[in-house]
Amino acid sequence: MRRGLSSKTLLCRLWVAVAALVTSTIWLWSSSSIVLLGTYRVQDFVVNDLWRTADSNGWRASSAPRTYWLPPPTESESNGYLRVRCNGGLTQQRSAICNAVVVARIMNATLVLPELDTNSYWHDESGFVGIYDVPHFIKTLKYDVRIVMSLPKITAQGKTKKLRAHKIEPPRDAPVTWYRTTALEKIREYGAIYLTPFSHRLAEEIDEPELQRLRCRVNYHALQFKPNIRKTSSDIVNKLRSEGHFMSIHLRFELDMLAYAGCIDIFTPKEQEILLKYREEHFAKKKLVHRERRLIGKCPLTPEEVGLIIRAMGFDNTTRIYLASGKLFGGERFMKPFKAMFPRLENHSMVGSGKLDQGLAGSAVDYMVCLLSDIFMPTYDGPSNFANNLMGHRLYSGFRATVTPNRKALAPIFMDMDEGHASGYEERIRQVMFSTHFGAPHRRIHPESFYTNSWPECFCQMKARNQADQCPLNNVHDVLESQFHSTGEVSAAASAKR
Image (cartoon, rainbow, N blue to C red; front, side):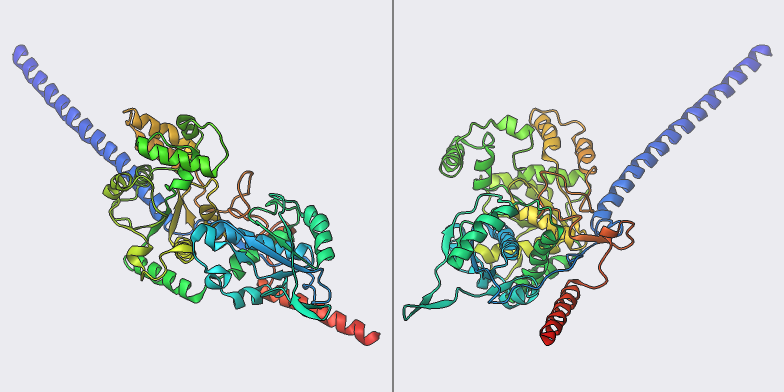
Protein backbone atom coordinates (compact mmCIF):
# COMPACT_ATOMS: atom_id res chain seq x y z
CA MET A 1 0.00 0.00 0.00
CA ARG A 2 2.72 2.43 1.04
CA ARG A 3 4.80 1.33 -1.95
CA GLY A 4 1.84 1.87 -4.36
CA LEU A 5 1.17 5.31 -2.87
CA SER A 6 4.80 6.23 -3.37
CA SER A 7 4.62 5.21 -7.05
CA LYS A 8 1.52 7.31 -7.56
CA THR A 9 3.07 10.24 -5.74
CA LEU A 10 6.21 9.95 -7.83
CA LEU A 11 4.13 9.81 -11.01
CA CYS A 12 2.22 12.94 -9.99
CA ARG A 13 5.40 14.73 -9.15
CA LEU A 14 6.86 13.73 -12.53
CA TRP A 15 3.81 15.15 -14.35
CA VAL A 16 4.07 18.35 -12.33
CA ALA A 17 7.75 18.65 -13.23
CA VAL A 18 7.05 18.04 -16.94
CA ALA A 19 4.22 20.60 -16.90
CA ALA A 20 6.47 23.12 -15.16
CA LEU A 21 9.22 22.47 -17.70
CA VAL A 22 6.82 22.93 -20.64
CA THR A 23 5.35 26.07 -19.07
CA SER A 24 8.83 27.49 -18.46
CA THR A 25 9.88 26.69 -22.02
CA ILE A 26 6.77 28.35 -23.45
CA TRP A 27 7.30 31.39 -21.15
CA LEU A 28 10.95 31.67 -22.14
CA TRP A 29 10.09 31.37 -25.85
CA SER A 30 7.34 33.97 -25.44
CA SER A 31 9.67 36.28 -23.53
CA SER A 32 12.34 35.88 -26.16
CA SER A 33 9.81 36.53 -28.88
CA ILE A 34 8.57 39.64 -27.11
CA VAL A 35 12.12 40.95 -26.68
CA LEU A 36 12.89 40.08 -30.27
CA LEU A 37 9.69 41.67 -31.53
CA GLY A 38 10.36 44.63 -29.29
CA THR A 39 13.77 45.08 -30.90
CA TYR A 40 12.27 44.97 -34.36
CA ARG A 41 9.54 47.37 -33.32
CA VAL A 42 12.08 49.83 -31.96
CA GLN A 43 14.19 49.39 -35.07
CA ASP A 44 11.19 49.85 -37.34
CA PHE A 45 10.12 52.90 -35.36
CA VAL A 46 13.57 54.51 -35.77
CA VAL A 47 13.66 53.81 -39.51
CA ASN A 48 10.10 55.04 -40.04
CA ASP A 49 10.91 58.11 -37.99
CA LEU A 50 13.82 58.90 -40.31
CA TRP A 51 11.49 59.33 -43.28
CA ARG A 52 10.20 62.46 -41.55
CA THR A 53 12.08 65.68 -40.81
CA ALA A 54 14.18 65.82 -37.64
CA ASP A 55 12.87 67.45 -34.46
CA SER A 56 13.46 71.22 -34.68
CA ASN A 57 13.25 71.82 -30.91
CA GLY A 58 11.48 75.09 -31.64
CA TRP A 59 14.08 76.40 -34.11
CA ARG A 60 13.50 77.55 -37.68
CA ALA A 61 15.66 78.94 -40.46
CA SER A 62 15.98 82.73 -40.69
CA SER A 63 18.65 84.75 -42.47
CA ALA A 64 16.89 88.10 -42.06
CA PRO A 65 19.05 90.83 -40.48
CA ARG A 66 18.59 91.21 -36.73
CA THR A 67 20.24 94.66 -36.63
CA TYR A 68 20.05 97.71 -38.88
CA TRP A 69 21.32 96.82 -42.37
CA LEU A 70 22.49 99.65 -44.62
CA PRO A 71 21.36 99.56 -48.27
CA PRO A 72 24.10 98.90 -50.88
CA PRO A 73 25.99 101.85 -52.38
CA THR A 74 24.79 103.67 -55.45
CA GLU A 75 27.09 103.83 -58.47
CA SER A 76 28.65 107.06 -57.26
CA GLU A 77 29.10 105.76 -53.68
CA SER A 78 30.70 102.44 -54.69
CA ASN A 79 34.43 101.93 -54.06
CA GLY A 80 34.78 100.13 -57.40
CA TYR A 81 33.96 96.92 -59.24
CA LEU A 82 34.65 93.38 -58.04
CA ARG A 83 35.17 90.53 -60.50
CA VAL A 84 35.71 86.94 -59.33
CA ARG A 85 36.35 83.61 -61.04
CA CYS A 86 34.82 80.70 -59.13
CA ASN A 87 36.68 77.45 -59.70
CA GLY A 88 35.93 73.83 -58.75
CA GLY A 89 32.73 71.79 -58.89
CA LEU A 90 29.14 72.99 -58.61
CA THR A 91 28.97 73.46 -54.84
CA GLN A 92 32.53 74.72 -54.51
CA GLN A 93 31.56 77.43 -56.99
CA ARG A 94 28.32 78.01 -55.08
CA SER A 95 30.27 78.69 -51.88
CA ALA A 96 32.57 81.01 -53.81
CA ILE A 97 29.56 82.99 -55.12
CA CYS A 98 28.31 83.40 -51.53
CA ASN A 99 31.76 84.61 -50.50
CA ALA A 100 31.91 87.03 -53.44
CA VAL A 101 28.67 88.71 -52.35
CA VAL A 102 29.96 89.02 -48.78
CA VAL A 103 33.30 90.44 -49.99
CA ALA A 104 31.50 93.01 -52.18
CA ARG A 105 29.48 94.01 -49.12
CA ILE A 106 32.62 94.26 -46.96
CA MET A 107 34.37 96.53 -49.48
CA ASN A 108 31.27 98.57 -50.37
CA ALA A 109 31.90 97.50 -53.96
CA THR A 110 29.75 96.73 -56.99
CA LEU A 111 29.76 93.02 -57.83
CA VAL A 112 30.11 91.93 -61.44
CA LEU A 113 28.10 88.74 -62.04
CA PRO A 114 30.51 85.97 -60.89
CA GLU A 115 32.28 83.88 -63.52
CA LEU A 116 32.15 80.09 -63.28
CA ASP A 117 35.24 78.18 -64.37
CA THR A 118 33.30 75.55 -66.30
CA ASN A 119 35.86 74.67 -68.97
CA SER A 120 38.68 73.22 -66.87
CA TYR A 121 36.46 71.06 -64.63
CA TRP A 122 33.27 70.36 -66.58
CA HIS A 123 34.40 70.97 -70.17
CA ASP A 124 31.26 72.96 -70.94
CA GLU A 125 30.48 76.66 -71.26
CA SER A 126 27.26 76.96 -69.27
CA GLY A 127 28.52 79.69 -66.98
CA PHE A 128 26.41 81.48 -64.39
CA VAL A 129 23.65 82.40 -66.86
CA GLY A 130 23.34 78.77 -68.01
CA ILE A 131 22.84 77.37 -64.51
CA TYR A 132 21.30 80.04 -62.26
CA ASP A 133 18.29 82.32 -62.57
CA VAL A 134 20.11 85.65 -62.98
CA PRO A 135 17.11 88.05 -62.62
CA HIS A 136 16.11 86.24 -59.40
CA PHE A 137 19.70 86.43 -58.09
CA ILE A 138 19.97 90.19 -58.66
CA LYS A 139 16.46 90.94 -57.37
CA THR A 140 16.86 88.87 -54.18
CA LEU A 141 20.10 90.64 -53.26
CA LYS A 142 19.07 94.18 -54.23
CA TYR A 143 19.09 95.29 -50.58
CA ASP A 144 22.50 93.71 -49.95
CA VAL A 145 24.83 94.45 -52.88
CA ARG A 146 24.71 96.21 -56.23
CA ILE A 147 25.21 93.67 -59.05
CA VAL A 148 25.96 94.37 -62.71
CA MET A 149 26.33 91.99 -65.65
CA SER A 150 29.74 93.27 -66.78
CA LEU A 151 32.35 95.94 -66.22
CA PRO A 152 31.36 99.37 -67.56
CA LYS A 153 33.01 101.16 -70.45
CA ILE A 154 35.13 104.22 -69.75
CA THR A 155 36.32 107.05 -71.96
CA ALA A 156 39.98 108.00 -71.82
CA GLN A 157 41.86 110.24 -74.26
CA GLY A 158 38.86 110.32 -76.56
CA LYS A 159 38.63 106.53 -76.73
CA THR A 160 35.93 104.32 -75.20
CA LYS A 161 36.97 100.96 -73.78
CA LYS A 162 35.92 98.53 -71.07
CA LEU A 163 37.32 99.19 -67.60
CA ARG A 164 40.18 96.79 -66.93
CA ALA A 165 40.26 95.01 -63.56
CA HIS A 166 43.54 94.61 -61.66
CA LYS A 167 44.22 90.89 -61.14
CA ILE A 168 44.91 89.62 -57.59
CA GLU A 169 45.22 86.11 -56.16
CA PRO A 170 43.69 86.34 -52.67
CA PRO A 171 45.16 84.28 -49.79
CA ARG A 172 43.33 81.06 -48.99
CA ASP A 173 40.74 81.58 -46.23
CA ALA A 174 41.60 85.28 -46.12
CA PRO A 175 40.24 87.11 -43.06
CA VAL A 176 37.78 90.00 -43.36
CA THR A 177 40.61 92.38 -42.44
CA TRP A 178 42.50 91.48 -45.67
CA TYR A 179 39.53 92.67 -47.74
CA ARG A 180 39.10 95.81 -45.63
CA THR A 181 42.74 96.77 -46.10
CA THR A 182 44.75 95.21 -48.96
CA ALA A 183 41.88 94.49 -51.36
CA LEU A 184 40.09 97.77 -50.58
CA GLU A 185 43.25 99.76 -51.25
CA LYS A 186 43.65 98.08 -54.67
CA ILE A 187 40.01 98.52 -55.72
CA ARG A 188 40.20 102.21 -54.89
CA GLU A 189 43.47 102.53 -56.80
CA TYR A 190 42.37 100.72 -59.99
CA GLY A 191 38.60 101.14 -59.92
CA ALA A 192 38.15 97.37 -60.39
CA ILE A 193 39.87 94.20 -59.17
CA TYR A 194 39.73 90.63 -60.47
CA LEU A 195 40.09 87.96 -57.76
CA THR A 196 41.15 84.62 -59.25
CA PRO A 197 41.01 81.83 -58.29
CA PHE A 198 38.27 82.46 -55.75
CA SER A 199 37.58 79.06 -54.19
CA HIS A 200 37.97 79.12 -50.36
CA ARG A 201 39.26 82.72 -50.41
CA LEU A 202 37.25 84.02 -47.46
CA ALA A 203 37.46 82.57 -43.96
CA GLU A 204 34.39 80.53 -43.04
CA GLU A 205 34.33 81.60 -39.42
CA ILE A 206 33.51 85.31 -39.35
CA ASP A 207 32.78 86.98 -36.03
CA GLU A 208 30.05 89.12 -37.60
CA PRO A 209 26.69 87.28 -37.55
CA GLU A 210 25.08 89.63 -40.10
CA LEU A 211 27.72 88.74 -42.71
CA GLN A 212 27.10 85.04 -42.01
CA ARG A 213 23.38 85.60 -42.48
CA LEU A 214 24.14 87.30 -45.80
CA ARG A 215 25.93 84.10 -46.86
CA CYS A 216 22.73 82.19 -46.08
CA ARG A 217 20.58 84.64 -48.03
CA VAL A 218 22.79 84.10 -51.06
CA ASN A 219 23.05 80.32 -50.72
CA TYR A 220 19.48 79.45 -49.80
CA HIS A 221 17.43 82.27 -51.33
CA ALA A 222 19.27 84.03 -54.17
CA LEU A 223 21.01 81.07 -55.85
CA GLN A 224 18.09 79.45 -57.62
CA PHE A 225 18.70 77.13 -60.57
CA LYS A 226 17.20 77.94 -63.97
CA PRO A 227 13.58 76.82 -64.58
CA ASN A 228 14.57 73.90 -66.86
CA ILE A 229 16.87 72.46 -64.17
CA ARG A 230 14.22 72.89 -61.49
CA LYS A 231 11.57 71.22 -63.68
CA THR A 232 13.79 68.23 -64.54
CA SER A 233 14.64 67.80 -60.85
CA SER A 234 10.99 68.08 -59.82
CA ASP A 235 9.93 65.52 -62.43
CA ILE A 236 12.53 63.04 -61.13
CA VAL A 237 11.47 63.58 -57.49
CA ASN A 238 7.78 63.14 -58.38
CA LYS A 239 8.56 59.94 -60.27
CA LEU A 240 10.62 58.55 -57.39
CA ARG A 241 8.05 59.54 -54.77
CA SER A 242 5.11 58.13 -56.75
CA GLU A 243 5.76 54.79 -55.03
CA GLY A 244 6.50 56.17 -51.56
CA HIS A 245 9.58 57.50 -49.78
CA PHE A 246 13.04 57.50 -51.34
CA MET A 247 16.57 57.96 -50.10
CA SER A 248 19.41 59.73 -51.94
CA ILE A 249 23.05 58.73 -51.54
CA HIS A 250 26.09 60.69 -52.67
CA LEU A 251 28.42 57.83 -53.57
CA ARG A 252 31.87 59.44 -53.60
CA PHE A 253 33.76 56.40 -54.91
CA GLU A 254 35.48 58.19 -57.79
CA LEU A 255 39.01 58.44 -59.18
CA ASP A 256 39.86 61.90 -57.84
CA MET A 257 38.58 61.28 -54.30
CA LEU A 258 40.17 57.84 -53.95
CA ALA A 259 43.49 59.20 -55.21
CA TYR A 260 43.25 62.17 -52.86
CA ALA A 261 42.41 59.95 -49.88
CA GLY A 262 45.22 57.50 -50.67
CA CYS A 263 42.96 54.48 -50.27
CA ILE A 264 44.19 52.09 -52.95
CA ASP A 265 44.86 48.64 -51.42
CA ILE A 266 41.47 47.19 -52.43
CA PHE A 267 42.18 47.74 -56.13
CA THR A 268 44.00 45.70 -58.76
CA PRO A 269 47.68 46.52 -59.53
CA LYS A 270 46.60 48.26 -62.76
CA GLU A 271 43.99 50.36 -60.93
CA GLN A 272 46.49 51.23 -58.21
CA GLU A 273 48.86 52.46 -60.89
CA ILE A 274 46.13 54.75 -62.28
CA LEU A 275 45.32 56.10 -58.80
CA LEU A 276 48.97 56.75 -57.92
CA LYS A 277 49.58 58.51 -61.22
CA TYR A 278 46.54 60.73 -60.73
CA ARG A 279 47.63 61.56 -57.19
CA GLU A 280 51.13 62.45 -58.35
CA GLU A 281 49.76 64.78 -61.05
CA HIS A 282 47.12 66.55 -58.96
CA PHE A 283 48.06 66.48 -55.26
CA ALA A 284 51.03 67.24 -53.03
CA LYS A 285 53.51 64.42 -52.52
CA LYS A 286 52.79 62.59 -49.29
CA LYS A 287 53.22 59.01 -48.09
CA LEU A 288 49.82 57.53 -47.29
CA VAL A 289 49.21 54.09 -45.78
CA HIS A 290 45.80 52.60 -46.62
CA ARG A 291 45.24 50.90 -43.24
CA GLU A 292 46.16 54.03 -41.30
CA ARG A 293 43.94 56.21 -43.51
CA ARG A 294 41.03 53.84 -43.06
CA LEU A 295 41.38 53.71 -39.27
CA ILE A 296 41.12 57.50 -39.00
CA GLY A 297 38.07 57.59 -41.27
CA LYS A 298 39.77 59.13 -44.31
CA CYS A 299 38.73 56.48 -46.85
CA PRO A 300 35.45 56.87 -48.77
CA LEU A 301 32.98 54.09 -48.01
CA THR A 302 32.75 51.38 -50.66
CA PRO A 303 29.32 50.71 -52.24
CA GLU A 304 29.13 47.41 -50.35
CA GLU A 305 29.86 49.12 -47.02
CA VAL A 306 27.09 51.64 -47.73
CA GLY A 307 24.68 48.77 -48.37
CA LEU A 308 25.69 47.01 -45.13
CA ILE A 309 25.13 50.21 -43.14
CA ILE A 310 21.63 50.97 -44.38
CA ARG A 311 20.61 47.30 -44.16
CA ALA A 312 21.85 47.12 -40.56
CA MET A 313 19.83 50.24 -39.76
CA GLY A 314 16.67 48.39 -40.77
CA PHE A 315 16.02 49.49 -44.35
CA ASP A 316 14.89 46.53 -46.46
CA ASN A 317 15.48 45.64 -50.10
CA THR A 318 12.33 47.46 -51.26
CA THR A 319 13.89 50.82 -50.34
CA ARG A 320 14.15 53.09 -53.35
CA ILE A 321 17.55 54.77 -53.63
CA TYR A 322 18.70 57.61 -55.88
CA LEU A 323 22.45 57.60 -56.50
CA ALA A 324 24.21 60.91 -57.08
CA SER A 325 27.73 60.22 -58.28
CA GLY A 326 30.19 60.63 -61.09
CA LYS A 327 31.84 57.66 -62.77
CA LEU A 328 32.52 55.02 -60.11
CA PHE A 329 36.11 53.81 -60.09
CA GLY A 330 36.73 50.07 -60.29
CA GLY A 331 33.69 49.21 -62.36
CA GLU A 332 30.69 47.00 -61.79
CA ARG A 333 32.38 44.60 -59.36
CA PHE A 334 32.12 47.20 -56.58
CA MET A 335 28.45 47.90 -57.28
CA LYS A 336 27.36 44.25 -57.54
CA PRO A 337 27.10 43.55 -53.76
CA PHE A 338 25.24 46.83 -53.22
CA LYS A 339 22.75 46.04 -56.00
CA ALA A 340 22.18 42.57 -54.53
CA MET A 341 21.16 44.15 -51.21
CA PHE A 342 19.21 47.08 -52.69
CA PRO A 343 18.08 46.39 -56.25
CA ARG A 344 15.93 49.52 -56.57
CA LEU A 345 18.81 51.88 -57.42
CA GLU A 346 18.24 54.87 -59.72
CA ASN A 347 20.20 57.85 -61.06
CA HIS A 348 19.25 60.87 -63.18
CA SER A 349 20.03 59.00 -66.40
CA MET A 350 17.59 56.24 -65.49
CA VAL A 351 14.65 58.34 -64.27
CA GLY A 352 15.31 61.70 -65.98
CA SER A 353 14.63 62.90 -69.50
CA GLY A 354 18.28 62.56 -70.50
CA LYS A 355 18.55 66.24 -71.49
CA LEU A 356 20.52 67.38 -68.43
CA ASP A 357 22.73 64.41 -67.62
CA GLN A 358 26.16 65.93 -68.11
CA GLY A 359 28.38 68.68 -66.76
CA LEU A 360 27.31 71.44 -64.42
CA ALA A 361 23.61 71.02 -65.26
CA GLY A 362 23.73 67.29 -64.44
CA SER A 363 25.35 68.06 -61.10
CA ALA A 364 22.68 70.69 -60.45
CA VAL A 365 19.93 68.11 -61.05
CA ASP A 366 21.64 65.69 -58.63
CA TYR A 367 21.87 68.50 -56.08
CA MET A 368 18.16 69.30 -56.28
CA VAL A 369 17.02 65.66 -56.13
CA CYS A 370 19.25 65.06 -53.08
CA LEU A 371 17.96 68.26 -51.47
CA LEU A 372 14.33 67.19 -51.91
CA SER A 373 14.76 63.50 -51.02
CA ASP A 374 13.26 62.15 -47.79
CA ILE A 375 16.66 61.00 -46.51
CA PHE A 376 20.12 62.01 -47.68
CA MET A 377 23.28 60.01 -46.98
CA PRO A 378 26.79 61.27 -47.79
CA THR A 379 29.49 58.60 -47.98
CA TYR A 380 32.42 60.99 -47.78
CA ASP A 381 32.06 64.42 -46.17
CA GLY A 382 35.73 65.42 -46.05
CA PRO A 383 36.63 67.85 -48.82
CA SER A 384 33.45 66.83 -50.64
CA ASN A 385 31.77 70.21 -51.06
CA PHE A 386 28.70 68.58 -52.66
CA ALA A 387 27.83 66.59 -49.54
CA ASN A 388 28.81 69.36 -47.12
CA ASN A 389 26.67 72.00 -48.82
CA LEU A 390 23.73 69.64 -49.18
CA MET A 391 23.74 68.81 -45.49
CA GLY A 392 23.69 72.54 -44.71
CA HIS A 393 20.93 73.21 -47.25
CA ARG A 394 18.78 70.37 -45.89
CA LEU A 395 19.28 71.68 -42.34
CA TYR A 396 18.12 75.14 -43.46
CA SER A 397 15.19 73.68 -45.43
CA GLY A 398 13.34 72.38 -42.39
CA PHE A 399 15.81 69.92 -40.81
CA ARG A 400 15.43 67.26 -43.49
CA ALA A 401 16.73 63.87 -42.35
CA THR A 402 20.40 63.20 -43.05
CA VAL A 403 22.20 59.95 -42.23
CA THR A 404 25.90 60.71 -41.72
CA PRO A 405 28.11 57.63 -41.24
CA ASN A 406 30.96 58.00 -38.77
CA ARG A 407 33.66 56.40 -40.93
CA LYS A 408 36.23 56.39 -38.14
CA ALA A 409 33.90 54.48 -35.79
CA LEU A 410 32.78 52.11 -38.56
CA ALA A 411 36.29 51.30 -39.86
CA PRO A 412 37.17 48.69 -37.17
CA ILE A 413 33.87 46.88 -37.84
CA PHE A 414 34.51 46.58 -41.58
CA MET A 415 38.17 45.68 -41.05
CA ASP A 416 37.11 42.87 -38.69
CA MET A 417 34.70 41.64 -41.37
CA ASP A 418 37.50 41.68 -43.97
CA GLU A 419 39.45 39.39 -41.64
CA GLY A 420 36.53 36.97 -41.25
CA HIS A 421 35.19 38.24 -37.91
CA ALA A 422 31.68 39.18 -38.93
CA SER A 423 29.79 38.01 -35.83
CA GLY A 424 27.46 40.70 -34.46
CA TYR A 425 28.47 43.25 -37.09
CA GLU A 426 24.92 44.54 -37.63
CA GLU A 427 24.44 45.37 -33.97
CA ARG A 428 27.84 47.12 -33.89
CA ILE A 429 26.87 49.19 -36.95
CA ARG A 430 23.53 50.11 -35.36
CA GLN A 431 25.26 51.32 -32.21
CA VAL A 432 27.40 53.65 -34.30
CA MET A 433 24.66 54.87 -36.60
CA PHE A 434 21.91 55.50 -34.04
CA SER A 435 24.15 57.82 -32.01
CA THR A 436 23.95 60.64 -34.60
CA HIS A 437 21.64 63.68 -34.77
CA PHE A 438 20.07 62.78 -38.17
CA GLY A 439 19.74 66.40 -39.33
CA ALA A 440 18.47 67.99 -36.11
CA PRO A 441 19.79 71.43 -35.04
CA HIS A 442 23.16 71.30 -33.32
CA ARG A 443 25.95 73.74 -32.58
CA ARG A 444 28.75 73.95 -35.15
CA ILE A 445 32.04 72.63 -33.80
CA HIS A 446 35.36 72.83 -35.68
CA PRO A 447 36.16 71.37 -38.18
CA GLU A 448 32.50 71.37 -39.26
CA SER A 449 32.00 73.86 -42.09
CA PHE A 450 29.66 76.87 -41.93
CA TYR A 451 28.21 75.65 -45.23
CA THR A 452 27.45 72.31 -43.57
CA ASN A 453 25.88 73.85 -40.49
CA SER A 454 24.92 77.52 -40.32
CA TRP A 455 23.34 77.10 -36.87
CA PRO A 456 22.91 79.27 -34.86
CA GLU A 457 23.59 82.38 -37.04
CA CYS A 458 20.98 81.52 -39.70
CA PHE A 459 18.33 80.15 -37.32
CA CYS A 460 16.01 81.60 -34.73
CA GLN A 461 13.91 80.18 -31.92
CA MET A 462 10.17 80.72 -31.95
CA LYS A 463 9.92 80.79 -28.14
CA ALA A 464 13.38 82.05 -27.30
CA ARG A 465 14.61 82.78 -23.81
CA ASN A 466 17.67 84.52 -25.21
CA GLN A 467 16.83 87.75 -27.07
CA ALA A 468 19.60 87.12 -29.64
CA ASP A 469 17.78 83.92 -30.72
CA GLN A 470 14.35 85.53 -31.21
CA CYS A 471 12.78 85.28 -34.66
CA PRO A 472 12.19 88.46 -36.70
CA LEU A 473 8.51 89.37 -37.06
CA ASN A 474 8.70 89.27 -40.88
CA ASN A 475 10.46 87.24 -43.56
CA VAL A 476 13.81 88.16 -45.10
CA HIS A 477 12.42 90.26 -47.95
CA ASP A 478 9.99 92.20 -45.73
CA VAL A 479 12.67 92.99 -43.15
CA LEU A 480 15.10 94.26 -45.77
CA GLU A 481 12.45 96.19 -47.68
CA SER A 482 11.18 97.99 -44.57
CA GLN A 483 14.75 98.96 -43.62
CA PHE A 484 15.45 100.14 -47.17
CA HIS A 485 12.34 102.36 -47.23
CA SER A 486 13.14 103.72 -43.76
CA THR A 487 16.59 104.73 -45.02
CA GLY A 488 15.02 106.35 -48.11
CA GLU A 489 12.61 108.35 -45.96
CA VAL A 490 15.44 109.55 -43.70
CA SER A 491 17.51 110.56 -46.74
CA ALA A 492 14.55 112.39 -48.32
CA ALA A 493 13.86 114.25 -45.08
CA ALA A 494 17.52 115.27 -44.80
CA SER A 495 17.52 116.53 -48.39
CA ALA A 496 14.33 118.56 -47.78
CA LYS A 497 15.91 120.26 -44.75
CA ARG A 498 18.91 121.27 -46.85
